[in-house]
Length: 404
Image (cartoon, rainbow, N blue to C red; front, side):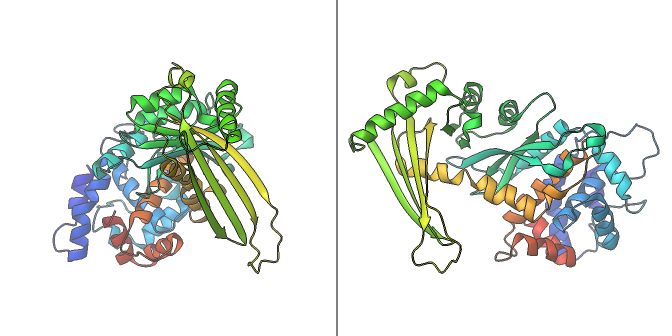
């Protein structure tokens, strides 16, 4: 068991290592129930929990492939043996690849959820931003394997990926989101989704989990879109009267552009509030975005003026400032999670393809990213630099892991 493995080095260690030993089980005992896919009684030299521990530490320390994991563990073997026996040495990259490819992804997700639950996060009023991402190099033309798609739930205020689920050959993002919501404990949170997920089943699942929602509306839900857009256009023609509308306007200057955002909200029409299809709609809103060149900028590349209008629905009351915040923060799932996975963890370039290996490595990346972003020991250090430092220095690696 993993507890026994971590107790292995608990005597005669320095204070830093002792602190790490006392905190490690909070993360890794959650994987005690992970089923070992290898045949019972077979020639198994490497403990599964030791492999999970070493792989995650290696990914935090800069490993992006199974060969990297093997070499990382080999280079820090004495350090790893403070925590786990590794009686038969370091697993080869083929062993990592073979074992993790055979792991059950649903069971792995359950273990991740145990870890999230152990953190005892307060999600009341927090935005849970859900979106999908394709691992572009995970396809394999020779075996007709399509690229893996992962749907993730990101909480920007807590810098943590709450959970993730992969789509299957028979499903897509639309069917995957309710399954992901079923895994999560999101009572009191506010779930944000793009227009693809403006679905009655998804909204019902969010409300069943005692959470609120803010969801973009487009023409894929033609009747709903018509009702929302017509009502807001009608109010717009009246100048958005203050007695029935609330407005929040912000202006940001960045990268040679001026972006103006105007969010206007109002109570949902009675026919929508009474609709059995769209559960608990209380507000509808419109976001007007205008981008134009900053006349004071020294940028040489011209910036074309653009105007964009989007509509949304929500189970929250019509508070323009509050809803504008959730609408804007939805894109942190792209800017903070997906961007980081591609730039700092080279996820889009990963060619791990065998079995469930790509999905499991994707889960490990998201855990590693959450651990790194939540770390405060290297407060003013970039994610890339944290990974480099964790690879160079076991002291930095210990600080990042024990602080999570």
